[in-house]
Length: 333
Ligand code: FES
Ligand SMILES: [Fe+2]
Image (cartoon, rainbow, N blue to C red):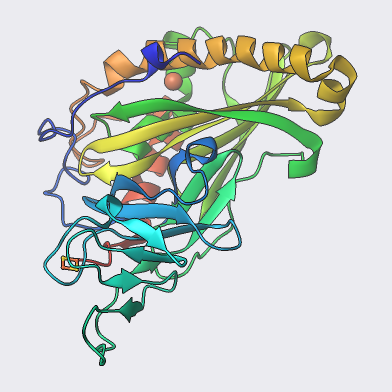
C-alpha cells in the first residue's frame, strides 16, 4: 500500500466528542485488550522504536530470541524517552545517564553505582508478533489469545499487514460498524446484511450473516479488532482483519490485514498471490473511505443519550457491552 493512504495526523488534543468514554470525561483507563503497535517488518533486530500508546508512550524492540518486547518508555531516573537510547548487551541504555534496563524491565546497570534499588524498573507489557504486526496487551497479563480468523487456522492463511494510520477516533467506535447492520446497507451498499446470530462473549463478539449472495463470519476481539471470513457467490472467499491500537483519549492508530487461503496462494505462486492481495487492499480502503468521514466527525454521547430503534438491537447491545468491558490503566501513571 502506498503511504499516501496513511493518515498522517500529529497527536493533537482530540475533538471533544471523541475523547470521552461513553459520554463521560476520560478516566485514564483503556480497554483491556490486544493492540497492534506497528508493522513487524519495521522492527529489525537492534532497533528501539517509540510508540504512543494508552495516553503515554512505550518502547518496542526485539529481545535476544527475536521476540518483541514492549515496555514503558520513560526512564525512571528523570524521565528521558528510552526510544532515544540504544540496545547494549540486550538491555536498553538510556541516552541521558546510561542507566540500562533488561527485557524484564529490571534496571541492570547504573554507571558508577553498585547498589541498584529494586524499585528502579520500567514496566513490560505482554507482547507478541502475529499477522505481520507487533502487539501489546493493555494489562499485566493477557487475559485472552491473539486474534484469529474465523474457520481457518493461521497456517492455512497467506497474509499481508498494512498500516492505515492515526485517526481522531476511538477504535471501538470504528469497530461498532460490525454490529451496526443498518450502516452496512446505507453506507457500504451491502444487500441483506442482517445477522443470523450475534454472540457477545467475554472478549470476543461472534457474528454470522447469511444471505443468498454471501455468508459472513466475523469475530471482534477486545472491542477493537475485527477478523472476517466472507464466502461470496461463485466460491469466492474474502479474508481480512482490521482494527486499531488505543493511542490516547479519542485517538486510534489503525492497521489491517488482507489474506487468502494458503493453498490458493501456493497454487498461484508468490508473485501472483502478492498481486492478488494488493488488489484486495482496494476493497478495504473503499470501506475506510466510506466510513471515516462519518465516524471521525460523529458526536457520540453514550448509549443513554442515543436514540436507538428496533433495528439497532445489536448495535445497542454492543454499546452497552463496550461500556461494561474491563479496562486497565497504563503502568507508568
Ligand atoms: S534519565 Fe535515564 S538515565 Fe537519567
Ligand atoms: Fe463500515
